Image 1 (tube, rainbow, N blue to C red):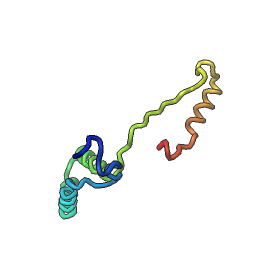
Image 2: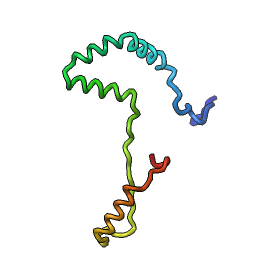
Image 3: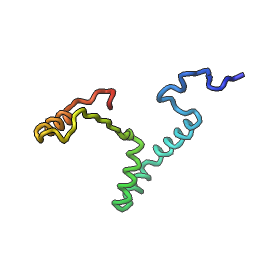
Length: 105
Protein backbone atom coordinates (compact mmCIF):
# COMPACT_ATOMS: atom_id res chain seq x y z
CA UNK A 1 0.00 0.00 0.00
CA UNK A 2 1.39 3.42 -0.92
CA UNK A 3 2.54 5.68 1.87
CA UNK A 4 1.65 9.36 1.59
CA UNK A 5 4.74 11.42 0.72
CA UNK A 6 6.74 8.39 -0.48
CA UNK A 7 7.42 7.66 -4.13
CA UNK A 8 9.43 5.25 -6.24
CA UNK A 9 11.37 8.25 -7.53
CA UNK A 10 12.16 10.46 -4.52
CA UNK A 11 14.26 12.81 -6.68
CA UNK A 12 11.22 13.55 -8.88
CA UNK A 13 11.27 14.10 -12.61
CA UNK A 14 14.75 15.03 -13.87
CA UNK A 15 15.27 18.66 -14.84
CA UNK A 16 14.48 19.20 -18.51
CA UNK A 17 12.48 15.97 -18.88
CA UNK A 18 9.54 16.39 -21.25
CA UNK A 19 5.97 15.76 -20.26
CA UNK A 20 4.94 12.52 -21.98
CA UNK A 21 1.30 13.60 -22.21
CA UNK A 22 2.01 16.76 -24.24
CA UNK A 23 4.92 15.47 -26.36
CA UNK A 24 2.71 14.20 -29.28
CA UNK A 25 0.79 17.49 -29.37
CA UNK A 26 4.01 19.52 -29.47
CA UNK A 27 5.39 17.30 -32.25
CA UNK A 28 2.18 17.72 -34.29
CA UNK A 29 2.20 21.50 -33.87
CA UNK A 30 5.87 21.64 -34.84
CA UNK A 31 5.24 19.54 -37.97
CA UNK A 32 2.24 21.74 -38.92
CA UNK A 33 4.30 24.92 -38.56
CA UNK A 34 7.17 23.49 -40.61
CA UNK A 35 4.82 22.44 -43.44
CA UNK A 36 2.97 25.76 -43.50
CA UNK A 37 5.78 28.17 -42.66
CA UNK A 38 5.76 29.88 -46.07
CA UNK A 39 2.04 30.69 -45.81
CA UNK A 40 2.41 31.83 -42.19
CA UNK A 41 5.29 34.12 -43.20
CA UNK A 42 3.24 35.66 -46.03
CA UNK A 43 0.31 36.22 -43.67
CA UNK A 44 2.55 37.89 -41.09
CA UNK A 45 4.01 40.19 -43.76
CA UNK A 46 0.47 41.31 -44.71
CA UNK A 47 -0.20 42.56 -41.16
CA UNK A 48 0.11 46.23 -40.22
CA UNK A 49 3.28 47.13 -38.33
CA UNK A 50 1.74 47.02 -34.83
CA UNK A 51 0.25 43.55 -35.27
CA UNK A 52 3.43 42.30 -36.96
CA UNK A 53 5.52 43.43 -33.99
CA UNK A 54 3.06 41.71 -31.61
CA UNK A 55 3.43 38.46 -33.57
CA UNK A 56 7.24 38.77 -33.49
CA UNK A 57 7.10 39.31 -29.74
CA UNK A 58 4.94 36.23 -29.22
CA UNK A 59 7.18 34.10 -31.44
CA UNK A 60 10.31 35.27 -29.62
CA UNK A 61 8.90 33.98 -26.34
CA UNK A 62 9.20 30.45 -27.77
CA UNK A 63 12.86 30.72 -28.73
CA UNK A 64 14.37 33.02 -26.11
CA UNK A 65 14.57 32.06 -22.45
CA UNK A 66 12.27 34.01 -20.21
CA UNK A 67 14.00 36.42 -17.86
CA UNK A 68 13.47 35.80 -14.19
CA UNK A 69 12.85 38.70 -11.89
CA UNK A 70 15.71 39.44 -9.56
CA UNK A 71 15.24 40.26 -5.91
CA UNK A 72 18.28 42.08 -4.58
CA UNK A 73 18.63 42.14 -0.84
CA UNK A 74 21.36 44.61 0.04
CA UNK A 75 22.37 45.25 3.59
CA UNK A 76 24.57 48.23 4.37
CA UNK A 77 26.23 48.28 7.73
CA UNK A 78 26.70 52.05 7.87
CA UNK A 79 24.06 54.69 7.54
CA UNK A 80 24.15 56.26 4.11
CA UNK A 81 23.40 59.64 5.61
CA UNK A 82 26.86 59.76 7.17
CA UNK A 83 28.72 59.17 3.89
CA UNK A 84 30.14 61.93 1.73
CA UNK A 85 29.27 62.21 -1.96
CA UNK A 86 32.70 60.81 -2.79
CA UNK A 87 32.12 57.79 -0.55
CA UNK A 88 28.63 57.22 -2.00
CA UNK A 89 30.02 57.38 -5.55
CA UNK A 90 32.77 54.90 -4.64
CA UNK A 91 30.16 52.55 -3.16
CA UNK A 92 27.98 52.83 -6.28
CA UNK A 93 30.99 52.16 -8.54
CA UNK A 94 31.89 49.11 -6.45
CA UNK A 95 28.34 47.71 -6.73
CA UNK A 96 28.12 48.35 -10.47
CA UNK A 97 31.54 46.89 -11.26
CA UNK A 98 31.36 43.81 -9.05
CA UNK A 99 31.40 40.66 -11.22
CA UNK A 100 28.36 38.40 -11.00
CA UNK A 101 29.12 34.82 -10.00
CA UNK A 102 27.26 31.86 -11.54
CA UNK A 103 25.36 31.41 -8.26
CA UNK A 104 23.86 34.89 -8.56
CA UNK A 105 22.74 34.64 -12.21
